Image: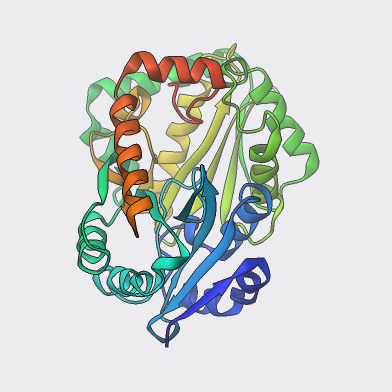
Length: 363
């Protein structure tokens, strides 16, 4: 029997069952883990009411939240915009899971006006299920691409496959870093100590991200969320640290799946050229050696990622109405998406709001 679980207490009560599904392989990425979404609700989802659907006799959890935006009741997957992959927690196939969710939502049309999904991967099953159970009127677009590096091979094999250009770049990065003095890398696991967190903040303060206003640790709810994730022993992640003569010059937060690593948050001192690239090369080398089949560089087809791979996976944004009001909202999303294609408007929005991508700039 399907069930709707409302509110934060209801969400918290789901933890044992959520972890049971996770142990059975129902959590596709770290962004669907209970601990990630628990911390996200505490720090980033303050204006969102959990609206969780438990489907298929408990084999599927749809971690939705409900918020009111400009008078529209919007359902969304919890974790946006801090999660690069959003989705369901399920031990069933994606076709079955999304069909079950769409069918359940069709019976609760009075509870929402619009379903807004962003950064979702399973476009085919989602669109098929929504059109079948909620009808026409939905809008969708490619949202981003996520480059990834196949690391199911040895480091020497990867270097041969990548070609002489990258091999020469890696030699150059190594040479420039060694010229600065004693270079060391280390890994830190949660809970991350306050002294190290202060060092991470200091690195961001001396980075290009701080100047552009896109530093994740600059302040506000995003800093609170990232700090909470780093400080929580439940978090499956590693913080990579790069030091020169003992001074921290770069770091990277890598989320850990069973056989897939996610290169989530990185920063480096702008006065230490190539520090970020040098650290990434060490992370790729470690992935090749440690049972990681894919190092996922996550959203954004940026230059430093293309130096490593031309293989990408797309994610999508979908707006689907439940009623007449929702249809008008879906049309509004489509108009906004068209406007977002204007580079001038994107630059203006970034300048006015002081926002940017946490991984956008090559190092």
